[in-house]
Length: 518
Image (tube, rainbow, N blue to C red; front, top):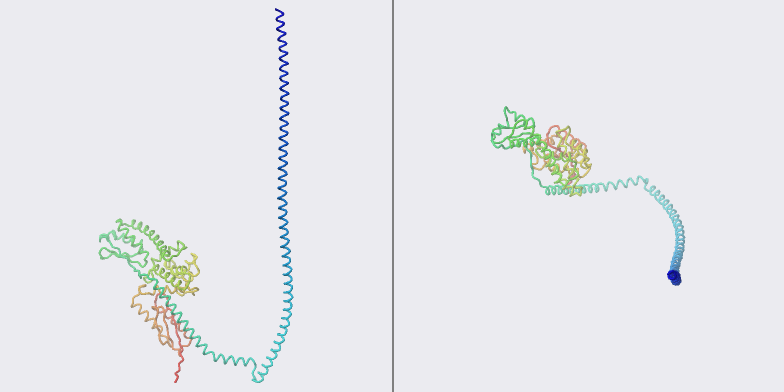
């Protein structure tokens, strides 16, 4: 039993030893195989590295060769460019040398020519000196022969030539003056007629009364009010005279001021439509109507500017232009007159090649002072000048306002055209309320004043009484006295007559020399 156990134990120990030996042998064999594999891998890696190294060296050599080829090519191109540049510089240097040589030759020729000119100039001076001496000798001989000095001889010749030519010069000047006047008159007449034909506007005169139609006669009593308080309020608030008579279903508003008359008319018409007529309501409606009329005035100014094609006008000046609608001169509406003057001035300016827009502006504003001349002291010309300067109008417009009645000298063609258009607009038939009888009497009085002076042959009133032409006897009135007579006639007209606008006085003294050939 013990033997068997020992045998088993020995067998186990031997088995364990053999197992250990076997494991060691197996591990040794594995290590040997692994070393061989590692060596093989290292060998393969070394071969692969050598291969990559050879490939890299080959690529480096190829790149180096390529770069060398490009560098050689670039160096070759630069050498060619340098050679070309050197060739051009050499050629340019050659050309400069040739040009310098030509300039030197030219300078030599110029120096030679200057020397020749100097010699010739000296010869000419010597010849001129000899000529002067010969002329002096000849003049001396002529003076000795004629026994006259040079100055006396020249005076005699000039006097004779002047006597021979004076008549021809005088006749020539008269012919040219007559021709120029004829042409100028014809052109001016054609220009004015053409402008008047191209502009056509109805003539409308303003009255001093307005009529309001009533729905019934009972409304008259309501307008008068208890003990006349309504009519008194209307007249005191509006500043007009309200005429209520036996005319059926109508009342009349009378006032010299068209603006007051218009405000009163609209106020009364509004009261009639409303039906409530008492003093407080009258004042309330009047205030509202007054504001509405002021807005309407601005619209009228804007409408006038639109019709004329004018822009860049101050808002306050637009309002003043609109106020001209409610201003009259001898029954002629001032706004319509100003628009008409603007259109006529623009037409004539266009014919003459002047600034049409500026001409229309000057024509429209020439009477702007009339819009407020009843509110302040001074003539409408002075007030108009202040207004134009206040709103920085053009100098041409300012001069047109100042000179359209001849108060100042006209400094531009447009100022003259404004004066002409103003005269045409005011003088055409029907434009102003002036009865035929008054018109004829004024003309007769004007001619009587002209004929009342000594030495007057005939006197004619012309241009609708805006000009008087006085023909004097040349043997009784000389040129100096003709100027004095014109001033005396002007002063007598101013002291004895009443007339609208201005009257031009022209004294004509004509000398005629007549002979009869037989």
